[in-house]
Image (cartoon, rainbow, N blue to C red; front, top):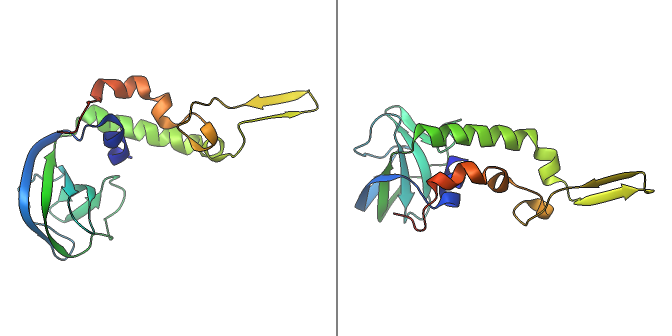
Length: 153
């Protein structure tokens, strides 16, 4: 979710950009990062995305499990050290909780229904979610806008 938020607000909170040749071997990469710091891989054929660096292994951007999908690869590209504010990380948790609580409504193919004029149901719609439902981007737009940038760094 954190990577999706950064994409939505066009802001990865880039602290340092490293360009050159990189190698992932044994699920690890040698980087000048702090334990727990997030980083972004760009230009890779197999591993583009946001990860969290740990001395014991690299985790996916959602920090739930080791990124077993990190493939051995040598490439020329960019790795950005990130400084994602704690408030954005907390907001990602809040958004995850909202998405989990609203999965059925979000994934429902129905935008409105009525039964014999007695019961009527309409979901809000403005184009973001499945079937035009309000998605997390709409619900959290006020909280996200302070982090929004026009272009990526």
